Amino acid sequence: MKKKRKRYTQEFKEESIKLIKEQGYGIAEAARNLGINETLLGRWKRELEGVSEGAAGTQNGAALQAELAQLRKENKRLRMEREILKKAAFFANEKS
Image (cartoon, rainbow, N blue to C red):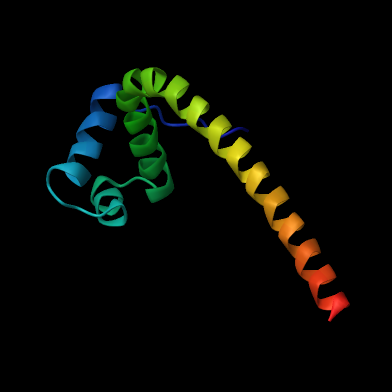
């Protein structure tokens, strides 16, 4: 026979996260006090933070993607420059 999972309300999840954020409890301590697994509480916290940051995240997402593309391009250019300098140093040492 399969064990039935316990379902928690959104309100319970939010109140649990408030213990961590506002009351200063650690995840493990709050989970112990609530009688739930600390992994579960940690997941709720990440999910809740993801939702609250989601609205700002979509606005910043395009800017972050543009910056990432620019940094990758710069990184590629710098690697090529480094390789050129390595070769120049090799040939300079060879002539000596």
